[in-house]
Image (cartoon, rainbow, N blue to C red):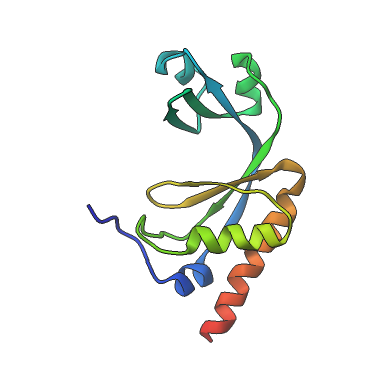
Length: 141
């Protein structure tokens, strides 16, 4: 099934609007727990792995769940509707952040991409992604 959304990398980069969450998040694992154990903590995202269930939780809810609250990440959401079949957007985002010395955990949802970056580098990450978009806009003009 083909997802809706854009696939032209240059247009996607030029039209993306990055926004930074105020809230901090952690990636937690629940090796033996089921969905019922996790959902009471309002996970932002879930992913089943062979080792257990990974949940993206707010730092506050991670504390309530009794799981590690470090390292902390902030979420940058991209307000551009990219297709799940678009080629190169994740690579472009990762490259821009890598050049700035920032790690990135990318979650591609149906409508938008979300990038989790270390809390202490969140503002620099946002700046790098804004610059990536500006350079793409300039090349389209």
